Each structure stands twice: as C-alpha cells, then as structure tokens.
Length: 209
Image: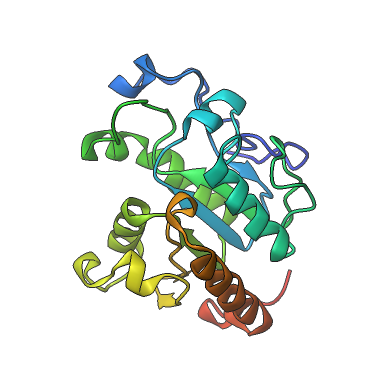
C-alpha cells in the first residue's frame, strides 16, 4: 500500500465503498484518515461525527472539530482556520477507530474490530512518534493495543495531556474536544508544546526527519 503524498484525504486509497458492517447502512460516506502521511503525531477518535460524515474529513464541521482544529493551529500543526473543512495540516494525521457515522449510537466492539485493519494500516504506514487518543473509547482501544499497562488503569480525565509510554509509541490522551473545558484545552496545548520541545523521538531512537 503506497501513500499518495499529494493527497491529504484518504492518502492510502482505502476502500471508500466499504460494506463490512452495519454502520455502512447509516453513513453518508466512509471517513478514512486525513493529513500528512509523514506525520509524527497521529490523532485517533472513536467514530466520525455528523460533520465529518458530511465533509469526509475527520474532526471537521462541528464545534468539537473546530476546537480540535484550533488546538492544532496553536501547536503549529495546521495553517487553516478552525472551521476549515479541508485543513492544511503539517506533521499531523487525523483518523478514527471506525469509519462510518451512526446518528443514534456508538460503535460496537465488533464494529471497531471490523475497522481495525484500516487503523492498523495507517499507523504502520505513517509510523508516528506520538499517538493521541481523542476521547475515552479511543484511549481504551489504543491503550489495549499499544501499551503494557492495563487499560483499566488509564483514565481519560486523569491522564489528559500526560505522556504514557507505549509499545513503540508514546501516548498523549486527550479528553474529547466536545467535552473539554477551556482550562483542559489550555493544559493540553501547554503540555504538548513542552513535549514537542523535548526529544520525544528517543522513544524509538529515530533521528529527525
């Protein structure tokens, strides 16, 4: 699977007509990952919002998405306004556990498992330094897969904006933007700027790109 370096939306050309689970009956479109394929920072949410289902771009077209895009701008990872539907991201990639929106419920464990190959392929191809689970469900799934610490010992409120050592990655959990207070947003930005100023690459012993 080769990346289209010039294409931000679904750069790995994943199936946009997927019918592998029940979620496909409720979506407007499949929402695969979006952003810089050489990113060091990969943000993972639970499932597309109604806004993302409309635009096809993760974390866009609603208030929660605008808060996240504003955070990316403060971190120097976006050159676009928070309400952009096709943000110009640099060194960041946005994606989800599952790829289809459901207006009435969260995805089941089985639906997350069905979509897991998409996420695993994106992580493998991008090979980021830092994984940012966005929201409690994303944190549980990412922690289970990529840390040796029991997911039950990790709490999204307690571990928001902290660094957790993972297997091959570091994790920096984020409370879902739709649930964040202004103080929690400021805390995340401050902590992440500090992380970006440190040698986080020592996690894998890699050199700068």
